[in-house]
Length: 241
Image (cartoon, rainbow, N blue to C red; front, top):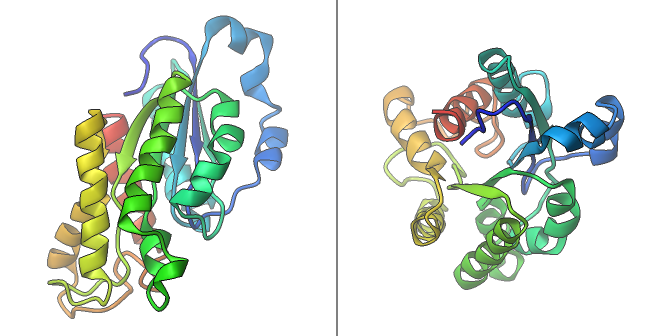
């Protein structure tokens, strides 16, 4: 999905649980995407909504993806950004897609969302996102991004608990939301990064003690170092096969 031209390739990355200070990123990068040379050559930007504030840390999957792409495509000016806000769900994305995504003129947007939509409704369904609002809202967000000229790749949500064979409390509901994302990707002919399936397959082999956490997450949800590396590897198979 990465442009092979010598454009500036900008990946802007973010999600439902992550933390991002866009002004800080722009300051650190000197607002490179808005230089005259960038405007002349065109800008290929990538926006990923991702799921953990650690994603933009030194061992976070955003950082890992940035390093891999920079090394693999030295001829391209690849920029990778984070743009998540802690606790966000699909309705939140609907409210900020123009400001936080479209305004940055991305070319490629990878949407990784769904954990909070399920998790926040664990004890009170009104605090989560209904399946209908999840699917409709996600479709609206994708439509706006496409209308602005950007490509979209869609990810399924990962895990809320690492036990195997559907033993986590929210597995059934999370499976249903992952299936909504799969169906939407198929309907809209989007590349799908099936993180949910990848996680479950990995845990079958690498969680012999059937632990609730500690394999790919530190607390059932948020990624540890191994989880960040696994997400980076899995996403790269979709965005840069």
